[in-house]
Each structure stands twice: as C-alpha cells, then as structure tokens.
Amino acid sequence: MKTTATVTSTDAHYLHHIHVGRFDLDSDEPRALGGQGAAPAPFDYYLASLSACTAITLRMYAERKGWNLGRFSAELALSFGEDGKVHVHRTLDSDQPLSDEQWSRLLEIVANTPVTKAMREGAVITSARRLP
Image 1: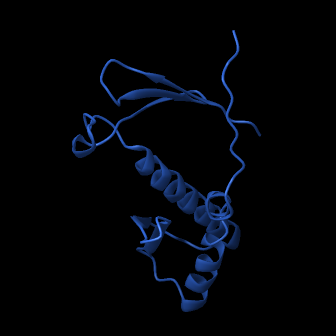
Image 2: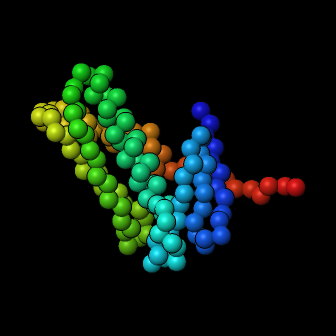
C-alpha cells in the first residue's frame, strides 16, 4: 500500500492545505506559536492518527471475538519529556461491561496497532528536492 500526501502553503502564514488520498485537510499552528489557530496543528494530527488506529484496530478485534464494545472511546494525551521525547498516554473506555481478561487482551492488542508500531519503532524518512 502506498499513500501520498501533498501540502501547499497559503497566504495565511502557517496555514497549509493538505491533500492525502482523496481527502483535503488543513493544518496550522496555534496563535501562541504565530499561527492563526485555524486548523489542527501537526501534533494534533499525530494524536488523531494514533487514536483512529487504536479505535479501528480494537473494533476489528472485538468483532472477530464477538465482543460488544458498544460506545468505545480512547483519550490520548501527548507531552514532551525532559529529554525532548514525545510521550503519549492512552486511556480506553467502553460503555459495555468487559471482563478483566477482555481488558487485558485489548491492552495487549492496542500496544501493537500498526500506527503504534510505526510511531514506537520509527520510520525511515528521506527528503529530496524536485528537479526541474
């Protein structure tokens, strides 16, 4: 699977338009960092990506097991350690009565979602300029 994203600047300082797949998004920085606060900041999308993968992966797993997750939610908090590393904490919740064994398994599964692994293990990122 290959996914591409294209980002294009605007006249509004840090506001940028992003096209990924067949979707259009915007990104900006908060006013405190010189942006307009007109759209999610890059780390907001980082958390959104991880939260979406968390919910989708756990929903798929629960469906295969025949478990009713009901209204499931995951709250993610991002902070930076003194070493500058990103720390993310996930808190999971369901409005259904799940056993301790089910929660234990869900916590094992969530530790290995595709986006979790990519963020935890890192990615190879290369850059080049477009030649005329």
